[in-house]
Length: 414
Image 1 (cartoon, rainbow, N blue to C red):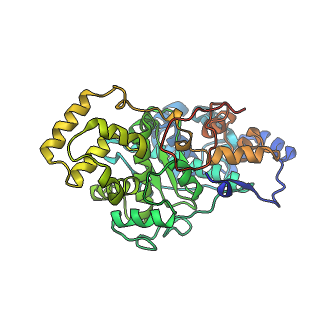
Image 2 (spheres, rainbow, N blue to C red):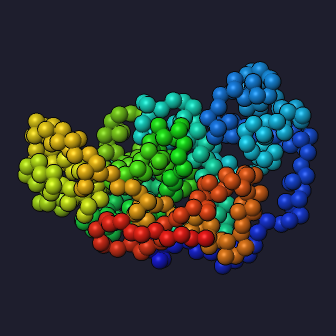
Image 3 (cartoon, rainbow, N blue to C red):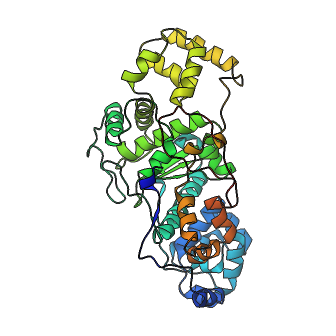
């Protein structure tokens, strides 16, 4: 993230923490008070975050699944005596169910899932709920810290208008975006930080069995575009970068299109390939035969996998289908060998999201605490820590440069 695009504290902010008197009133909330202003959408969100069914929740509360449906539709409200148990089983504070807090409401048609066919409905619902809460955290921080403005051609406050400022063809759009962002024609270093510097929120949640299957997803239906790259994609920095470029394509090309079409996935792959390895620049560097050693060297300088480079060779007519097929087999046999083994994301700070945690750290210098955020969001303190990655080893903030993609040592921050 460049210096002029780092989060900046609003000069007139003056927010130095949550009013203790307000916090005390919240902590003294009675179930009867929550019952009067119960928000049914919060119940759905909390249940989806746990990846649980209505029947499971009904069994935990000793009510019928039909009753849970009524609670979530707002046609009936849980009795006051049920609310403490409801908060307990869903692992949220009682105040979580209060109406009135900003809420980013998404549905399955508002997000593009990389592995739509292999994910179950409850897994997608969990991913959507996670994204909703990520936006709420972003909103809370943005009240205190000025984040980089959204600089995404065609994006207008929660909508992307395909064809506005960029061509609708994926290859042409990738080239045009490189020009718009001043990326030149060479390798793109620190891809994730670049996305963040243009106002896109990029998230890498902690390991979760449900999100593991989801792979990656994105949405442009919020005031800020959001890209989520799950742990399944962070095992290898090269796969991680391609997934990020793939989701960027969805944000630009498919903002008004219902997700799930296989043609959209192909377009996103075509965009990602041209965005990361522009044809005119990569073509002279690619071998005219299946030279895996050469491709391994190019992997390090261009930041894309050998597998992707092989596909690029075939796509650009340098390899026949049969030659590429034999090369893929040899590549499979070389898995785990030096030059071909996956590279852990932990060694690449520029490929790790930092926007929200840097914004939080800046706000902390002016009095914000984890407890303040937890109170304001009606989350638990551990949940806020988990979303921010607080207390864990975090990447060093480096200026974007032109050097090849190489591991950089990380540093512990308090």
